[in-house]
Image: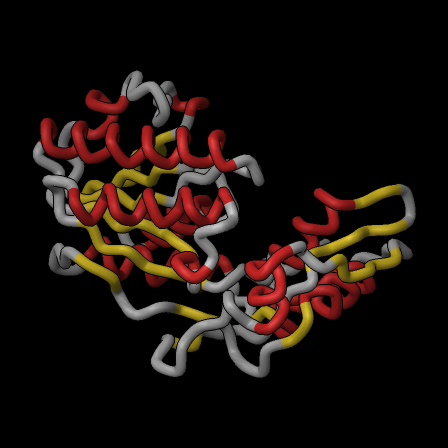
Length: 253
């Protein structure tokens, strides 16, 4: 099977590429480095020739509503159009658990639009929502470090391994095209504070950075702090645990 991966060099995308190749699939990586621009559509049609499915794991790191909306709208529209033209039968879209509860925040509102455009598009799209990744514990520190201190958002999280999410995305790409949402995926319980996970990850790499939780203003921030981004009771739980991941091959070094 020929599978294209949008965002194939990202946190989840690189694992999608690895897992799909391990299963014997031919993989096309859709990144600017490979000559494909998802926002403009340049190179997309040529890259998708002969593909049977696309895994859409592209992302933009921003808190600005306009930037996020422009990126996700363009990506969804260009992929839907190019996939229809090239006869691609299925798009598997990575999204975020709880995203529709936080539409007042620009990035999450943009992801809701992203889902909607794919689900309304001419090519069948399956949306997989995931909780935050284990990798997020250090990523958020890197983005919020001020000298010896990091101010991470006050969040209740139940993180999951990016590799486990990638494996689920490949499962869906291999399966029958299903227009709609697949069961959400989350990591093993119990939920914990994000700053706790960040401190554990920093200790693993020998960093002395001090981590403090910073409340996000407004009702959405209060909701995130109380667990708005946690999976529902019927979400699929995927290991490994955060502690096992720290000591495993994908953990921080």
